[in-house]
Image (cartoon, rainbow, N blue to C red; front, side, top):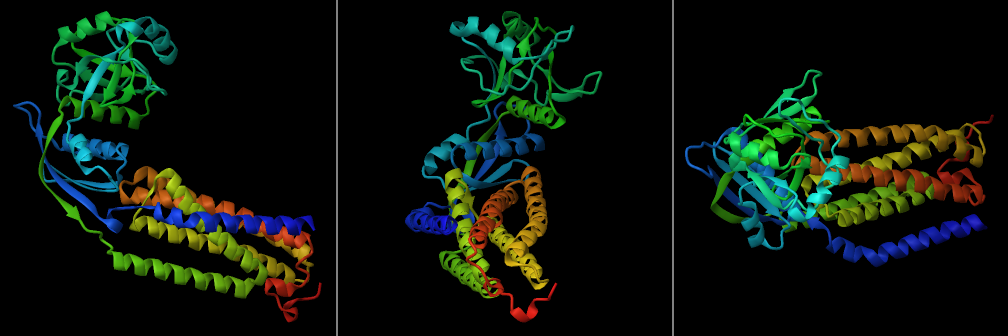
Amino acid sequence: MKRIVSFIVIVLVSIGVMVWSTPNLLNSVRLGLDLKGGFEILYEASPMTGGQEVTRESLVETAKSLEKRVDALGGSEPEITTEGSNRIRLRIAGVTDEKAVRERIKEPANLTFRSLGSASDAKATDKGAAANENEAAANGETESEAAADPYQGFDKIELTGSDFKPNGASVQYDQIGNPMISIELKDANKFADVTGRLIRQPMAIFLDDQLLSAPEVKQRITGGTAQISGKFTREEAQNLRDTINLGALPLKLTEKYSQSVGATLGQQSLDQTLMAGIVGSIIILVFMMFMYRVPGLIAAFCLIIHTWGTILIFNWAGITLTLPGIAAFILGIGMAVDANIITYERIKEEMRSGKSIMSAFRAGSKSSFRTVMDAQITTLIAGAVMFWLGTGSVRGFALVLMIDIVTSIITNVLLSRYLLSLLVKAKSLKKPGYFGVKGSEIREL
C-alpha cells in the first residue's frame, strides 16, 4: 500500500508543479538571433597609434575579445566574424540595452600590469607568497601560476599595453620542456624601475577587468625582456601570449554601420515548428502507451518531466535557445524515448521466456541498464568534445545536448525505473498484458 501511495504522490505533485510553473517557464525562455532577430554592427579596426598595422592575429584576437565582452554583458550566443583585413561583423540578440553594449564593446582591449595599492602593501607579501608557488630564474625572470581566485586591491597600474612591443610575446620552453611566455618591452629602464620597486610582491596581468596571471617579482629585471613561467599547459601559455600581444597592439573599432536583423526563422515558421513538435510528441506518447501499456504510460509521464526539467535548466542557467539548440533538444528527446524502449523490450523478452513479472522486471532492468547508460554517456562525451573544440552555434548545440542527456538519465532512466518498480513490487501489475505481452507469446520454461 505504501508503494502505491508513493507512486500517486510523486505523480500528483509533479503534475501540480509543472501545471503551475509551465506558463511562466515558457515565457522566460531566451531566444537567439535566428529565432527572434537582433542587431548587427560592422566595425572597421585600426591601430591606436600611428605607424602600426592591423595584423591577422590581432584582428582574430580582437574578435575573441568582443565575444567575451558580449557574453559578460548578457548577450546571447553572439555571431562574430572577421571580414577582409580589418573588419569585424557582430550579430547579437538578447540584449536589453543596445546602446550600452555598443559603447562597451567598441573600446580597445585594455592590457594592464597592476600592483597592490599602498594600503594593501603589507598584505601583498603574505598573500602573494601563499598564492604563487614559483621561483624566479637567476637571470631576471618572473614566474607565475595563474591565480585561482582574483586578487583584491590591484588598483595601481604600473604598465599598459603600449609599453610592450607589438607581437613581442612568444611561447618558449624551459630545459625540461615546460612552456613559458617571453615578453619584450619598449623601455627597459622603465621595466627595471617597476620591478625594482615590486621585489617580493605580485604584479598582476589584467585584460580589461579580468585577471589573467599574477607573477611575483623576485628581483629587479633589466634588459627589457622577462619570462613568465609556471604550471602552464601549452594551450594556456598560447592564450596568455595572444592576450598580451592583443593588448600590446590594441585596435580601435570604428562603427561603419548597424542595422536590425530579422529572425532567420520567422514567427509563423516558428509557430509551425512548435506545432509540429507538439504533434510529433503526442504521436510518440500514444505509440509508447499502445506498445507497452502501463510502462508506456510511465514513460510518457517521464518524457513530459524531462521536457519540463530541461527548459527549467535553460532558464536557471540563462541559456539562449537557437535553431541548433532546438535540434539538440529534439535529439535528446529521441534518446530518452530509446532508453525506455530498450528497457521495456528487455522486460517483455524476459516475460516471453516464461519468467514471472517480478523476475522479468529485475532481469530486464538489469540487462538493459548498461546498454542504455553506454549510449547516454558516449553521447555526453561527444557533446563535451564539441563544446570544447567548437565555437558559436556548435557550442550551443553541444551545451543543449549535454543538458538534455543529463536530464534524460535522471528522468527516463532512473525515475521511470523507480516508478515502475513501485507498481511491480506492490503487485499492482499482475498480468503480462499490462506490459503489452500476449499470453500466446509466452513460452513455457
